[in-house]
Amino acid sequence: MNPASGGNHYDVGDMIDIHNYPEPVMGLFDSKRVNVLGEYGGIGLVQDNHVWETNRNWGYVQYKTSEEATKAYVDLTEKLKKLIPFGYSAAVYTQTTDVESEINGIMTYDRKVVKLNEAQIRKANLEVIATLKK
Image (cartoon, rainbow, N blue to C red):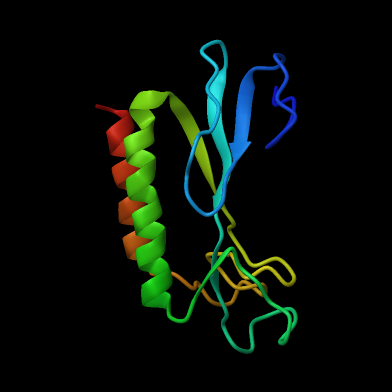
């Protein structure tokens, strides 16, 4: 059970869930529960004609090209690998798709464009998983 996603950390439940943007950082650690980075990332990239609102968009960090945004994603996964030996059990990138005025998604709001290079982010994710097996 996750007693509080991202805050209000009491000594109850099965996990401690931290949210941190954009960097994957675990500000708390609990030796009795699963330690999860429930949200990190927030790489902003506008794709014209695929946004909910054209003049009101935001991301935690904004990029101009898919190449820049993909590199930022890969750099964040490198940081995840370094945290595994310190007790991370899971990490959730925010977010899969853009949501209304948030342009932090891997895909656009209408799900018609994958904004990041799929092969590169898949490779980066598989490298994180491989680190867990060591």
